[in-house]
Length: 237
Ligand SMILES: Nc1nc2c(ncn2[C@@H]2O[C@H](COP(=O)(O)OP(=O)(O)OP(=O)(O)O)[C@@H](O)[C@H]2O)c(=O)[nH]1
Ligand SMILES: [Mg+2]
Image 1 (tube, rainbow, N blue to C red):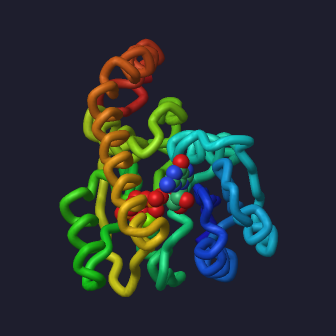
Image 2: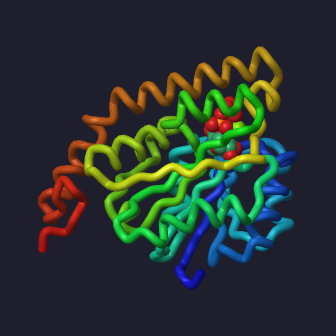
């Protein structure tokens, strides 16, 4: 693939999990640039990331997933496609990445491609299916990146923000199915009680983003309109 494809990986206390994701990404040879954002981790995430040929950016304190992705996108120079991957995936292969990137490149109108996990663990597949709006593995095309507003306020609502924006501006979105892959749930990372608390917090942040989306991005949408970008996301001139 001759297009400039970049990868952004947000990581918050992922030292035991981020290695295999970065190994797959670096060895795949698909990315011209890989940026990992250590989002104020208190474990050895930064040291683990340092073992791989990637750019590491550290937040001095935890700012949330949306801010981590925003920092990552900001560090890139005019990519054709940006891939977002969570740091805690298991079973990731170059084939998965190719299947996500391929429609983003092959279909000129494409805005965003999302991956949905299937044929894996029941609990993960169910979440991926019923809360697909939150799925973290995505490829964004230049067309969509150009109109993406600031995401740093959105925390775990960042996927809600991207999905709603694409819907409002009628930007084409596609989903691909990934089998043979899973991720660590919060309950597996933090224990049952703390993990479930973190899960409720994630859903709360996603709900909050849904609620405040309209006032938050209203100014941005108006600016796009003023710049001559129509509801369909096309440049009118
Ligand atoms: N928990 C958490 N994760 C963050 C934060 N900032 C960035 N991340 C990263 O965002 C990605 C997704 O976080 P997870 O906690 O795994 O969320 P999830 O996989 O959507 O949800 P689960 O179903 O609970 O696993 C991971 O790579 C995290 O390391 C943060 O403030 N809190
Ligand atoms: Mg996870």
